[in-house]
Each structure stands twice: as structure tokens, then as C-alpha cells.
Length: 325
Image 1 (cartoon, one colour):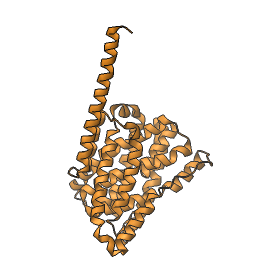
Image 2: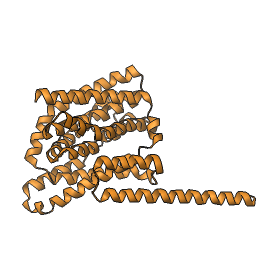
Image 3: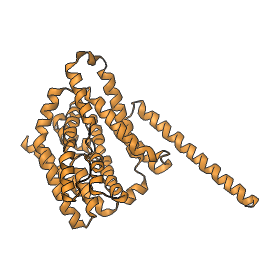
């Protein structure tokens, strides 16, 4: 290597390291802003999107694991602000709508996948992610149908894109239609994919909406178990293990403690506050993983399928809430 090439090589390394350090500094500063609790979950998501597409995520390889852990811990924390009796009433009210919207969405998704000629496994992942609980459902079904990395990534990309839109769109529509907190919470739980965006949108709307949305959404998440069994039968795979969302049990335990253990009331406001900050940080990490390359990798057909399915479940559940309740 000659002297000029050596200087260029060294400058290249220096510039790369400098750029990496700037990435880390920007990311940490924005993360601290989210941890202060002074910004809302939608703004945190927006900051994450800006990071992903301008400066870049310096620890992208850890993103999925961090989101997974943060979301579960935050949801359990929110359980300390909820009452068992109210939660049971909310779950009972949303049960029939859950069953109808869940199976009709998966059925429609199957037909849309064939009509659009979307890859069969990708189509099924998008359908189940839309019908149940977004990324959690996709994570549970992926090993059952033995989807490859691209099929899984495309399905997750579709879900996360639409989740991001829902976080801003649903509260706006709710206020425009003058939905009550009860109706809005139920609508969020039925029509928004991921628990993170459900909780984020409902929290923006009000405390009662948050309680109903969280409870109904987690009850809906339990449908992962029968849907995985059905998927195993359809894809003729009887060897895969079912991933049960065990954190829901801790969420229920938190509600029971808040309802029946008076001593817990001293600390519950602080736990709930920390949980809400945790949710805000979770949405920041979700946004920071949605770079332009991820968005472009999704493809038009899976995105169309996701949008049509989302429009269907959102419209069906809203009409049922407005006219049948």
C-alpha cells in the first residue's frame, strides 16, 4: 500500500468511526428525551423514524430484542393501574367482536393473498398479524410455517408501517367521530395490530380508553394458541412448539394485586408512570427500526394486502361498535 493509499485508508476509517460516534450520540440524546416522559408516544415514534432515515440506528441488531422485553415489562406495569372487575366487563364486551373480526380477517386475508398472488407464507403471516396482535402473532407463527427471513421481514414490515400510521390516525378519527373512551378503547384493541400502538393510541385518548384497550387486546392475544394450532394443521406441521405469551399472566397478577392488595396502592401510580415511559421508549425503538431500506423491502403486493385487511377490520369493528352496542 503506497503512502497516498494509506492516508486515504486511515481517513476512511477515521470518518467511519466519527460517523458511528455521531450516530450513537444522537441516538442516546433522543433516547434520554423519551425517558424524561415529556413527549407523547406518537412523537417518540416520529423521532425514531427520523433517526432511522437520517442518522441511522447504531445498535440495530439489538432492536428486536429490546422492543420485545420493553413492551412486555411496560404492559405488566400498566396492569397495576387497572381493576379486575372493570377488566372482566371489558373482555366480555369485546369477546364476540374479537371472534368475528379475527376469523373473518384471516379468511379474507387468504382470498386476498391468492388474488394478489402474494407469497402464501407471507400472506398468512400478514393475515394473522392483522387479526390477532401484530408482531407477536407473526413471531409465534413463523416457526410453525417455517417461513424464511425475507417472508417474515416483509410481514413484519407491513405490520409496523400500518401500526405507525394507526398511532396518529386513530385518535384523530376518534375525536372526529366523537367516540366515547369506552368505544375508542374497544376499537383500538380490535383494529390496531400491535399492543404497543394500541396502548399508545388509547393512552393519548384517555385513561379509561387505555384500560379497556389494554385488557381487550391482551385477551385477544391469547387467540395466538388456537390460531397456531390451526396453522399447524393447514401447513401440515405437527412438530412445532407453540409460543404462549406468558407475560399476560403477570399482567393479570398485577391487576389482582392492584384490586385486592390495598398496600400496593402506595406505589401503583409510580409503577404506571414508569410503564408509560417504557411504552414511549418502545415506540421510539420501533420507529428507529423502520429505515427506508426496510420500507422498500416490503413490496407493493404485501402492502396492498395489509392495507385492505386493515381497512376491513377497522371498518367492521367500528360499525359494530357504533351500531350494535
